[in-house]
Image 1 (cartoon, rainbow, N blue to C red):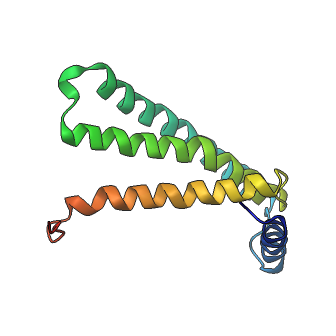
Image 2: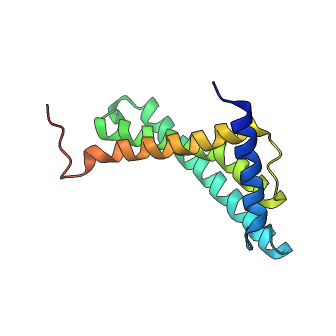
Length: 134
């Protein structure tokens, strides 16, 4: 169970940390517009591209090889990152305040860490020097 004091102190520390360093604010109007445009472009390309990969592999029976299943798993992990993490990263950066509450703050950080862990675990068996000893 998550301790409420820990979540609140983590949430408070994160908001204080964002305000104390220069360059973490939203910036000028042009910088904000550029940041929003880049986030939207990355979001749209990520959702459409990863959805197409996952649907292609899921619908075509001949595409279900071991390598393609790994690629589908990676595309689903990237899709989750785009849908779950990107909006909750852009909006607080622009507003300089996390408005979604402490529970969502913890969940977004957990999803970002879990996605990174999944990526690393999936890439380990592909490395030539990595061997599983039985």
